[in-house]
Image (tube, rainbow, N blue to C red):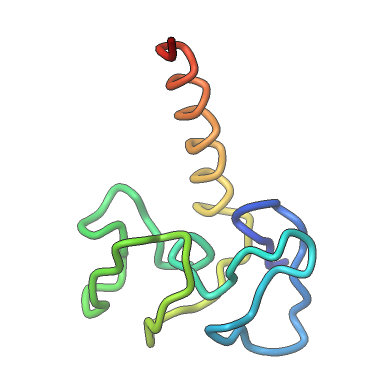
Length: 95
């Protein structure tokens, strides 16, 4: 099951995700590092694909040729949880 990194809703798997595709639920870009199976915040450039070029904004559409949509059960879900934990941490120190 493919899911959107932003809203967590299921993405139809009837075709490949193209660069300009958006989530039908929240309109966020789908061809992003955060939706890719190679996205890994623990490795260099946050990408497990060693030949991929560096992408500065992991949440915006890009031209990466190695993009493969993550199935939503592994790292993409953990990174969403980590992102919300980071937001909660940052709220502790706001004025």
